[in-house]
Length: 295
Ligand code: G3P
Ligand code: CA
Image 1: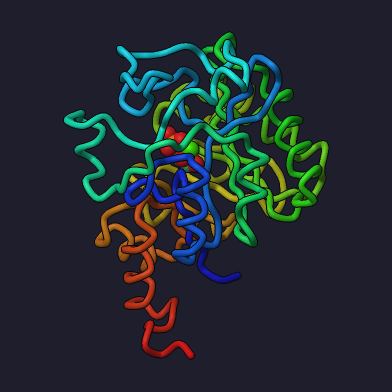
Image 2 (image 1 turned 45 degrees about the vertical axis):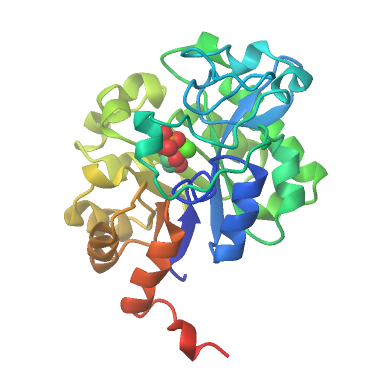
């Protein structure tokens, strides 16, 4: 299987995150997949936003004013209420904005229904992260309900073949796979969820698998993908995971030196805010032809 380039939240380093505008632009850059974060509104619509509540450095209210700190929970707003907010620019002067100095604003962009992302993109895979919080179940709908919503949207769009479901909260991933055996799925990990695996994985812990996170993921089923935080990942883990038949696609890799190192370790892809830089690294690594070589 060829190396896979995933655009994180579209291409957060270049375009406003989790917006249709960003996803369309990321597809035009040549990503294989766009990663996005799912929430469900008060009236039961699957939408795309990272946090469980509106984020004060991303969201402006209907009058154009920045939210004062954290806003309402997504699950407390109807789609119509949510669409009144603008997410097309990062708050100037914020630390968050300083992290993405090359992000180009798209004023007027709104939180998209997931359906709009399928409709606006052509062929790119949709890596839908179920943003349920195993340690804060009250903040969202249940993992099973969110998984059902995502599957229903993809099916209604005739795009189940473009869907991959992922989560740190493994319950939703299991539910999606049980409903659709063979659906591509990805198990997310980071240091925090591994440390609280009994909560986030709803049962198994690394200790049940000889202390090995790759073995815990492999126990979830054949052909699944493991997406670890790249800073937690070692070359030995990549080798172990691959020997277990896992695909390994770390996130969120934005430094070209890290990209090159991980490619050298044999990962199957990367998830990045900067697919433009990743493509340059892929060319140098022989994973893509140089632009001038293309017909
Ligand atoms: O899907 C991997 C990655 O997106 C997880 O981290 O916080 O960016 O959703 P986060
Ligand atoms: Ca995500």
